[in-house]
Image 1: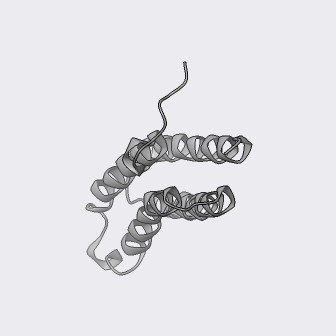
Image 2: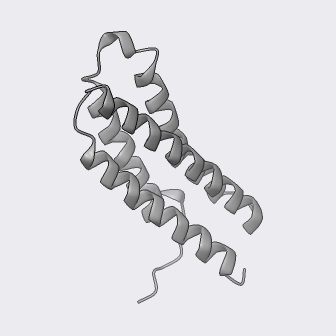
Amino acid sequence: MARAPAHTFRDLIVWQKAHEFVLALYRHTEHFPRSEIYGLTSQLRRASVSVPANITEGFVRRSKIEKARYLNIAQGSLEEVRYYLLLSNDLGYGDVRNLEARLEEVSKLLERYRTALLASGS
């Protein structure tokens, strides 16, 4: 069954899942040591927020190439978050398995969205 076209970025499942990921990540980083507030906490939050922000910005771009560019930037930020989660896990800052599963879901949705966008006729 085909989905109705998105009217705003909020209609995009990939944006919804990315936003949920950011909220979960913010909750997770609340428990990081205070010494990380300007380090890993800040980096993780900045990179995670970049994902839905770039999906949002790409949504309003006119050409498929421009839209795809912003989705690529979002994917790059997601990969940056992937590393920071690995690092935070290795530093013992909490279990990241749930976040990694959410990240993987967003990554797959981003790739499918970009592929569908580039394959579309308009």
